Image (cartoon, rainbow, N blue to C red; front, side):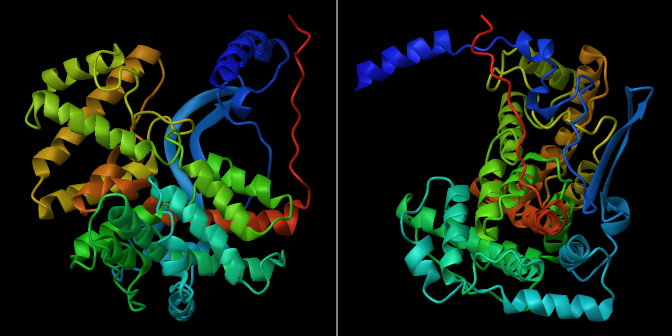
Length: 434
């Protein structure tokens, strides 16, 4: 069997090769990207908008970034509350199109609290069985399994989809935390400790409390995670995980399959896994030159990264640059502010300053090298924020998922209500080209 696979794979490499120049020859949008780097328009949405540049005379002009949820700028949405329920209000906004008043906010929080617990026996029958090496796979399994606990799982009635979506959003902190505990117990031999869900907590507080095994947290810590949830809640219909969910939803399958498809997409290191790559790169950098390194030492280290002479030798400076944002990523700006406050409380200001200087120098170098603006994206500081919150690396991408599921549900419902057409793009056959 092995020799067969070896032989046939070698043949596939030769006979199945597709020359990259064929994309340009046939005007095929590789990666659904236009020649100027903008995304190919494939849908309409009122959920969220990502603005990172202007188009003037068909040219892409750099601009400072803005992220709008239902027309509300992220800068106006974040940091306006002191009750640690900013994420809950963001979910309401994404689902229903307006910010809730005080009465609506309280009623919605109660709705989430009523749905936050997992079905009886779910932890034992699903989460504790066959623990996964990657928590994202465990979450996928759990979401799919919830289909079996639904009396009407295949309905595509929009109102019922919203109800099911809210239930899934509310359950994510428990699913994420318990999946992690199962991995630690079964695969790493550590004690298995389940903290019951506290319905009085916000989703950010619950995630922090459960992920840290019931340890106490400060207001600054909970507020920082609440902000991280807000900035990760959605990023338009064109981001890979949202679009994946939209494609699957267009087939009229169940919402559990839709959300699982989005989770599969988010797991990839080019998408939701990027924050872990930044964290590993920065840890390696600090180990190499120290947190008190001079700007000149940081500059030389970045040169080594670009020359494929340091870290993973890919030549990539993770966390710098973005497919849409040019001059700035608003999510990064807001999260950086929270990291600065958090670093003072956690007594790691020197490390924050290292991150900040590294960001500035790397952005300037890449801008000069490539002749276009490069700015830090949200992944540059998110891993550092989670580290200061005492959240293990295994949970970086799952926590991203616990936030982004809000946007996924909003886009899925919108697709079912208004698209009403299966998404079916075309591929050009080039088997006879060569």
